[in-house]
Amino acid sequence: MSVSAPVGGPVVLVGCGRLGSAILEGWLLTETVAPANLIVLSPSEKPAAEAARARGARINPPLEALIQAAVIVLAVKPAIWREVMAPLAPFLNDRAVILSVMAGVTAPTLAEGIGGWPIVRVMPTTGVSRGRGVASVWSADADAQAVGRALFAPMAETVVLENEALMDAATAVAGSGAAYFYAFTEALARAGEAAGLDAATADVLARASLRSAADSMGDDGLEALIGRIASPGGSTRAGLDALDHDGRLQTMLKDTVAAAVRRNREMGA
Ligand SMILES: NC(=O)c1ccc[n+]([C@@H]2O[C@H](COP(=O)([O-])OP(=O)(O)OC[C@H]3O[C@@H](n4cnc5c(N)ncnc54)[C@H](OP(=O)(O)O)[C@@H]3O)[C@@H](O)[C@H]2O)c1
Image (spheres, rainbow, N blue to C red):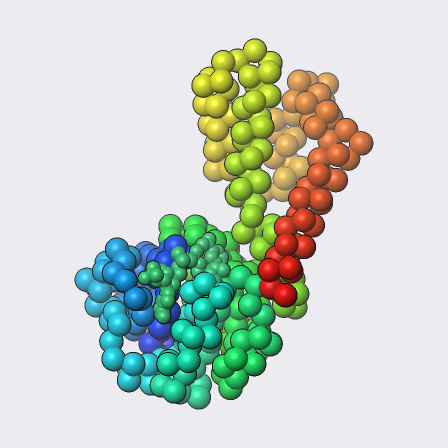
C-alpha cells in the first residue's frame, strides 16, 4: 500500500547514486510511494530514475514542483549537501520534512545549515532495493520520525534509535555488518584450506554454508539455532569452544564494532 496519505505529498529524492537508486528501486518494488508522488533530482541520467520515470515519476522537473513536497530525501555525498540544498530551500513549504541518509552529518549540523524544517536521519543499507534492507531511524520530532519509518519500514527491518549518538553504533553494526560477514566467510574458507581442502572447494563450501545459514536465520533465538547444529560432545561444539575460547570471539567483535564507531565519529566531527 502506498504511504502517500501519511506522508501527505510528493517525496523528493535528491541524489540517485548507489544508495539513492537502491531507495528508489525499493519504493517502487514495495509500492511504498506511488510513482506519481515521486520527484527525483539527479544531475546525470540513472537507470533507476529512468525506470521510475517510465512509471510516472517526475525527473528534474522545474523547482516550482517542490512547493508541494512533503519530504526531501537527501542522498548526496556529505561534502556537498549545503551547495545542493541552497537552490532548493526557497521552494520548500514550511511543513516539508528533511530526511537525511547521509552518514555522519548530524541533525544540529543540518539544522544550522538549513534550519526551519523538521529533520529525520535514516541510515539504510542498499538491501532496500530488494525490499530486504536494514534501517536505523532517529528524529527529535515525532512526526518526522513517523515519516522516516513510513518510508523505510516496507523495505527494511527498521529500528528507531533513542538518541542520535547511537547512529554511529547502528552504522557500525548494520552498515558494516555485511562486510564483517564476508570477511568471516573468507576466513572460514581459508581455514578449510588449511585443513586440507583445495581453495576452490573451500570457497564453495564456506559460501554455501553461510548463505544457507543466513537464509534460515529468521527471527528464531540464536542459541536455539546453534543448538540445532551443535550437539553436546559433537564436532561443531568442539569448533565453537575453540572459536570463543576465553571469550575471544566476543572480544574480537567488540573491538571491531568499537573501531568502526570511532571512525564514524571521526568522520562526522
Ligand atoms: N552507499 C551506501 O551503501 C550508503 C549507506 C548509508 C548511507 N549512505 C549515504 O548516502 C549518501 C550517498 O551515498 P552513495 O554511496 O549513494 O553516493 P553516490 O553513489 O556518489 O551518489 C551520490 C549522488 O549524488 C548526486 N548528486 C550530486 N550533486 C547533486 C545535485 N546537485 N542534486 C542531486 N543529486 C546530486 C550524484 O550525481 P552524479 O552521479 O550525476 O554525479 C550521485 O549520483 C552519502 O551521504 C552516504 O553517506 C550511503
